[in-house]
Image (cartoon, rainbow, N blue to C red; front, side):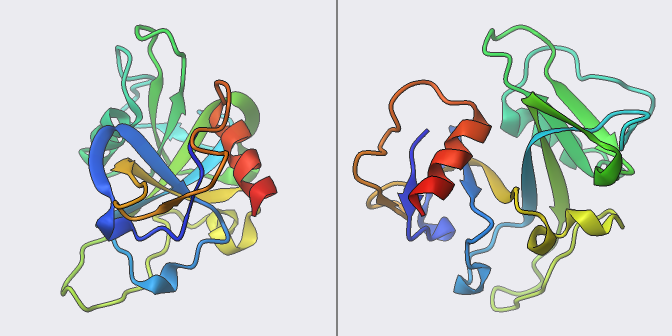
Amino acid sequence: CWLRKYVAIDDCEINQQFSLWLSPAYDETLGQYRPHKWTSLHSTNCYPGHGAENINGQDVLKGHHLIYECEHACLGEPSCEGIVWHDTQDGHTDNCYLCTNISLSHCTMDDAVNLRVLTRAARLASTSSTSVKPTTTDPTLDPEKSCHSWLAYSATNCYSGRGALQIEGKDPVPGHKLLKECQEECMADA
C-alpha cells in the first residue's frame, strides 16, 4: 500500500504488478483518460441471488489470476459488467468471478473480496471529453452517490517522476494491508 497525491494517470508507468485506485474525491476534470474505467467497491460481493448473475453459467475462472488478468477476461466478454476478485494471497486458489446484471442493493458485504464495475468506453478523438456511465442501470453504481466508490486502473503504477508525488511516511504504509485498509488509510490522510 503506497499513498500518492497529485496523480496524472497518463504520466504513470504501465506495470502489471500494480493497480491504482483513485479516491472518490479525485477530480476527473484534470483530463486523465484510459479507454476503460473500473469503479472499485471494496468489501462488496455480488453473485447469483445476491446482486449479480454469472456469465454463460460460469461461476469462477479456473486458476489464480492477478487483478489485471481478471479484468482482461471481463473485457473479452461483451456481457461482462464487472468482476469480483479475491486476494487469496496463496497464488493458486480460484479468485476471479465475472458478473453481469449487477445490482448493488442486493450484493453482500465481505472484507475478503472487491467488486470492480466496468465502464466500457472508446475514445473517439484525443481531445474529446465524454462523460461515461456504468454499463448497468443500477443508480447506486454512481460514484457521486457511493462513499466507497474508487476508480480503479489495473497495471498502473504512479510514483515521483512517473505521474504522482509520494506522501511522506506512506511510501509504503507499514505492514501488509487489505485493499479496504489501504483505502481507509488514504481517506484518513486526506
